[in-house]
Image 1 (cartoon, rainbow, N blue to C red):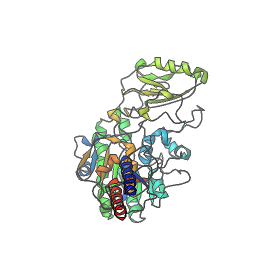
Image 2: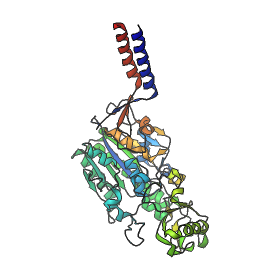
Image 3: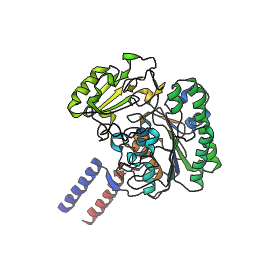
Image 4: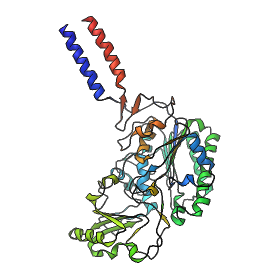
Length: 461
């Protein structure tokens, strides 16, 4: 009997430990069935754009037949390349290293700088050891594609997407060109049996910059174009026989706010009015974000001069950057970072007039920087609206939908898991893949088996 009591004590201890910590089982490369998945980004699809007064049947169909989020919070800085990379990797910019739209060399102010389009072709800017979804997919035996999605043309540790198309400065972005992109993607899925594709569209970003996010141009021309493109997407997915086997996520990188074009003279931010240029070895101003590397012996003087220079901006030593930005722990971020206040932009020398009527790149807590999220398809619930969430959470969802073991990331599947329908092709409620590549098995099953085993042993004893 003493043996039985000791054995039951061991069993009880095991049960208590299981309840305290779920069992982690190495999932390994997943190979379950999955639907095809299309990730679409409309650059600068601000969270409030689809609530404009004009009738937009494409957005209406999305809302009524899929999942809509109240908003999605982008990464910081709320620029195109950092935010798109965060969506694709589930990592914050300080972790994935794409900390800016442009390539720059903080150790040399005269070389190595590019604009957005130039940076798209600089492989080393994107190849930082992070793992975007198209690499996760192709590395685990799936066919993946990137169609002008920022970064999808690059290699990552020698690995590539199955197929990719790079956006160029001369790329057409009219409605006919957009429809060709959709036709090509449908062909990749249907004729070439791709599992995953990331597709990018330039609007409404271009017109929101040029005319302002609240302009008639955006309301009457650009957003109807986006809506017609969404309608065409659904029509073509049906024509290609993909409608019942294609999950679609439609999202964006950032929002947009109105630039204060009335600002003049001392109400503008002009950095060279505040510090001696000889004190700075590198300076790069881009929209509301300023990056500065002082000459070491002048670091304090530059910082103090900037702090006193304008009340329209925040100035941080790198180590002072707020933790919520997830931006300071990367070697590509220089010693001093400046962020402009709402509606203002940072210039080395103020050009006399603002470049844009609308801009982004601001504090990602600003409501105007919020962006959109929709999902629709056989794996998603219908007619559901969910609370806002951070963009890092899309990557683990995509891995789950494709049956992939995700790379380490800053997101959580738990955030968007409730948007999934009880689809037999997705995994069951009792097993959820985590970012660490393991599965959490509900402990009740293990407790039940241990109880049966202990009862059997007690009978023998």
